[in-house]
Length: 206
Image 1: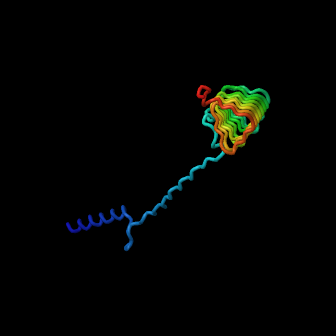
Image 2: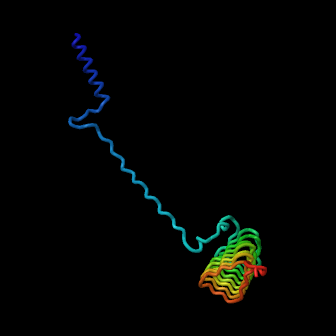
Image 3: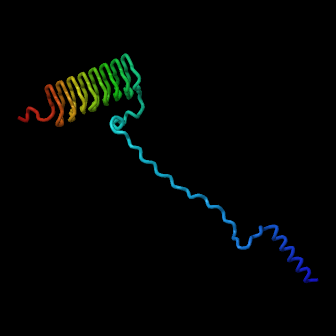
């Protein structure tokens, strides 16, 4: 009797185990899970090269708000503002204010402002700046210029009155008289007119 009970228990155990597990075929190991495809590392993005020329020379203050006259715009009449201003289009009239001015378009009229930068611009009129005036090699001015400082690489036809230092680069062309406290002229610059430098030695030194 005891032997029959043991056989019955063994049979039940085998039956129960057979329900809870899948039969394993002889000679086969456990099923392998498909391996995930290896993740390829993303190639680093190439650094963006900043374009040379005009955009590389934009002054820091140009991105601090203010107004912009777009390239396709033409403004006729007097323009007044004390905020920073960029003129990429054309202004047919005077421009006045105490803010800084960046011109890459054209102005037909007098200009009065704080700091002034001309980049490939054409100005037909007198310029009065309370700060520095910087004129690149592609810019042309037809009129007198009065400023605190001057850096000239372009062309001016008019008289210059500079309170501080006037720097004429190798590509500068000036047709007119120049008066400055200090003067620096690079080899290759063209100057046609009288020059007066007020700084340096005084009469008492002689």
